[in-house]
Length: 122
Image (cartoon, rainbow, N blue to C red; front, side):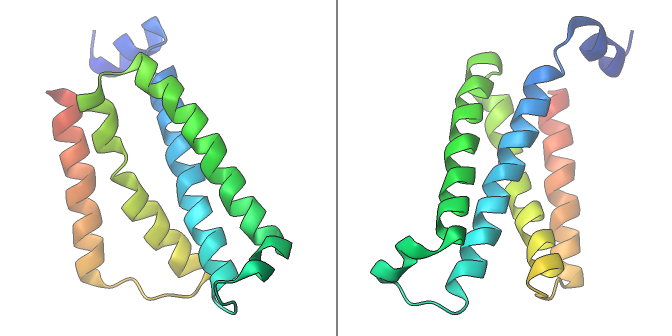
């Protein structure tokens, strides 16, 4: 039985889906807050902006899900997955903020994925 079959048979994939959900929500929070701060200054008027609440809601839900992940996965496995935030934020910034993603960044993303795979198999 290979790793994928073992994960599927035992339901061990659930914490990984939860981790991915938490990481995506955290990345979304970064994009929402960046959208908010593009045309704002740091002052009390932020409290009237829906993006402010959306960003912090995404962070809050992400943190709650992450606590569940920490209860299920060893920290040495779970925490390296957080590095996916770098990839998701950069891709979101390119898609929604029209920021440039260079070929060096793409190499970095590949290294992040490679590192996660090496750690997951260890």
